[in-house]
Image (cartoon, rainbow, N blue to C red; front, side):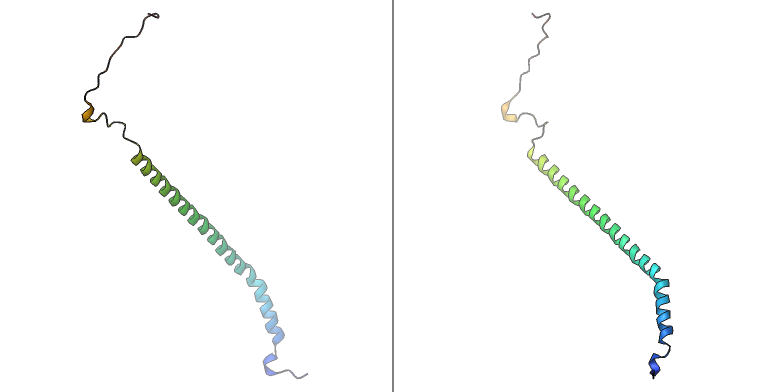
Length: 96
């Protein structure tokens, strides 16, 4: 068997690649896993912020709409109605 010049020591290269894969696989997978965890956490945080903004905006709009619809309790009678008479009565004593 005549081996070409480029294939000499291919077993050593293959063994080195296998050793590198075994040695470096755990840190590489760990880094990818941490990136996945970070992406998941960022997604949850972003979703929480967006949810808070939507709920806050909806609450603000609802409060403004209710305030504009409801008359103010302390407005009192209009000037064209005139004064209002109020009668004060004493409480009944023993069913009288």
